[in-house]
Length: 449
Image 1: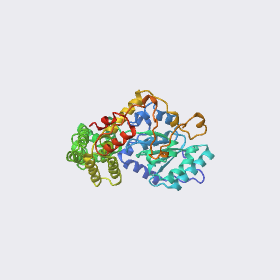
Image 2: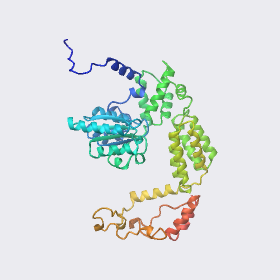
Image 3: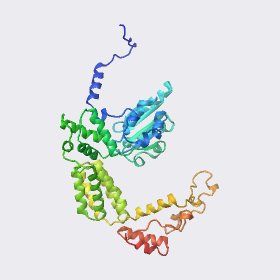
Image 4: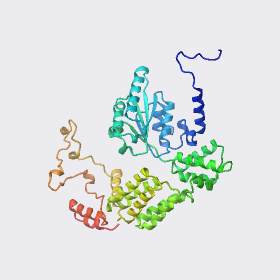
């Protein structure tokens, strides 16, 4: 018949039912999926990566992206970036989910990539979502293909890749850090959602949606979608957003979000467990993201407790892991335990102060070379250069310590860490006094915060 292309011999007839199902799925897909950006210009946030002239954008536009790890919190655009790459690359784009893919799937993808390169001269980009969920065997199976350039790996992860991705694999990939979206970015995402649904929202409702999202575009659109259903044809109000969050909403808006976490931190720093528990409860009842609270506690454990109680960081980290492993509401008990522990622990900010002093020297002070006896002597020819010559191995001494210079002479006399007399840090101070053996150090060590 005129106007119809003949079907190739052996080709399957078009699956009209599958096409219809695909169309309906697109229509019924969550708002976040329907609004997912298709181009780099559509992406909200991450301007340090995708703005015109930004490094990642240049590589994507030139189709010269090398193996990469996209690291950032949920809802910041990792999968979106991968899909933009899929739409622009001339390479074959193969997605895998680390949640349900095994070693056999990885090897099959590599075999397919080798076949594609040999038969068609076409490279392969292998996108692995949740790459931190790949175990060592799965990551090891990827390594040879990445190393020889057979596949370009793009891994997406919410976990710190320095802990969750094998070092050999990480060393062969460029790490791109995605940041939580700013409040203005989230407001833009919400505006696009309202426009797509031909809906309206009060300014207070938009502010509430922004405050509960915590920089997560997907969370913002998910809450918006529920609010749209509850509001019907009427504009969305802050009360509707509260109902969409099952009553868990930051009633005072974005300012209260920061004011309350500030009050929590200062109460813990001030060793008042009751006040700390009150603000912690206020934040939970207000719908605060438990992961945000957990992150702040982990930071505070080192910033305000420090080595006065070295277990503080362990407790805070365990609570943060419990949030991911257990989830709310049960994980509130783990967080409350960490709040009380940190509030009642002895306090010291001496590590924070020491780091600030060391960074000031590294940034502004004289920068001496690494002393020759401390330089790497493990490679061929290093000893000919004198590297490692004169180094004294502390374990060879019965005391487990030898007197030796470990810094360039320009900063050799600078003291950065001065322990307080609080908690376990008092014992550290005594040990340092014996090691340093300097007159006048004792007075500085015993000085109160």
